[in-house]
Image 1 (cartoon, helix red, strand yellow):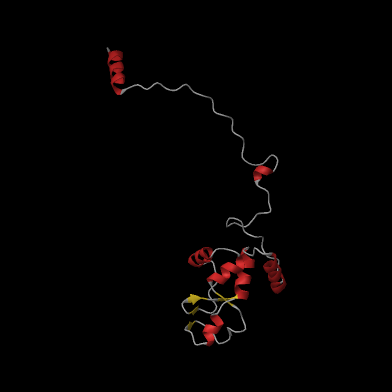
Image 2 (cartoon, rainbow, N blue to C red; image 1 turned 180 degrees about the vertical axis):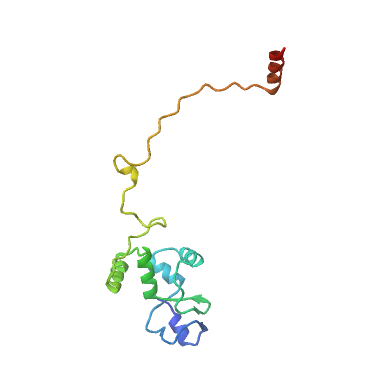
Length: 153
């Protein structure tokens, strides 16, 4: 986990924390701990923060860092398909009695339905190759003007 509970006990600056949340009984996660827990880079967690994909920080800001409780991040990760390890998926399913979403690959949730092109008789029509045309001759503007003069004469 992190040394944040020790920092809180030592009188660290805490904003946004409610009295109902006891930092000693619930593990507190920062950006690095979330990255380690979900097996992603810390840069990815910062992108989730910037895009406002992560839930609101439960503990607000502790020593200049946003902090979440582990159950909140576990629930969010299970609902958005970001639980990569079997142990976390099992913990989520036991805690919330709900099956976790499939793991995301490349930012998208996997789809159970096959693509239309894989279904027989469906999907985009195959195009026939276009007939090759002879390249058009390039005619300069001067030759076009001379051809008009000859045609009118």
